[in-house]
Image (cartoon, rainbow, N blue to C red; front, side, top):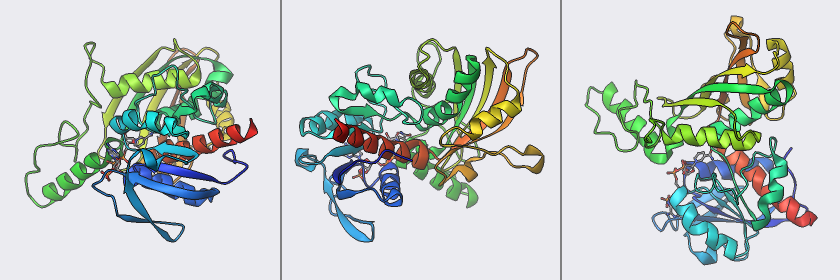
Length: 345
Ligand SMILES: NC(=O)c1ccc[n+]([C@@H]2O[C@H](COP(=O)([O-])OP(=O)(O)OC[C@H]3O[C@@H](n4cnc5c(N)ncnc54)[C@H](OP(=O)(O)O)[C@@H]3O)[C@@H](O)[C@H]2O)c1
């Protein structure tokens, strides 16, 4: 259950017309949060549009400093460039800021938090700002945190399969267009966002590749997960692929545990972990899939089994709704937690 602020508050949402912003609005409605005002902000391209919230039309405004003035909290869901520009302005206007982009996730002055994993890190939000991790880092931290505490993760290998929604509107539009063209015997246009055709394909590159051959998405996922688990030196090998799936990220994980843990003990541990659902009856074809994770407020985990010759080898597969749980759910929970802490002080 998310933290509850003791008094009603006003909220500014930057990126309200985007996929993540709309998912934030859905979560706000579903949790019935006590917001007296929700300001919908985007670029001037979408200023004047109306979006329904609790059955009432709300008008989208072009973002400017006045959009944040007097708001208690700002949720930034418009991407890195917009966050770099507007986070300092929102702070200067007196808002608590929750950032959904990658802009501040590596900044030691800004805590990176999943409330069910490292809530104490919110104590460092002295500047009134917190960053929300990428969706797969949220999923992995929720699942690996309890296993690490119980058995100590010596090392982990992750193969991440990321939906096109993680690439924003342009990723979703690219897959839609390519599917329509290929099914109608037309050659799709040159890809614009994802570097190759994604329909009926897998692309082993998320973001630019560095001098060591690692893609930005892989480096970021490893860094965010280490930060969330409080394990700065954790040996972690990540390969991230873009998958031809609209919504729902997934990951295949192999762990080497310092103290062996039987699969059934791992299942029992994860059954009592917050925001985690164990679905693991492979003989009946029941296991996590992106299709099942969509619209779920938990990470789904299954295919838990012993692997490798040495004791302590454990494999699992997980899936998360990247927009609803990995993105919007964590943003709203962080906003509520910051507001609750402020009213407690
Ligand atoms: N934390 C997570 O797990 C998570 C999950 C999903 C996405 N994300 C990140 O969230 C960001 C948005 O993703 P999305 O899928 O919602 O993208 P999207 O569908 O393309 O929407 C982008 C939104 O941001 C607005 N925007 C873009 N540039 C802006 C600017 N310079 N100033 C003000 N508003 C601006 C757009 O407004 P207009 O409609 O006016 O263009 C739109 O509302 C991306 O960086 C994405 O990587 C994070």
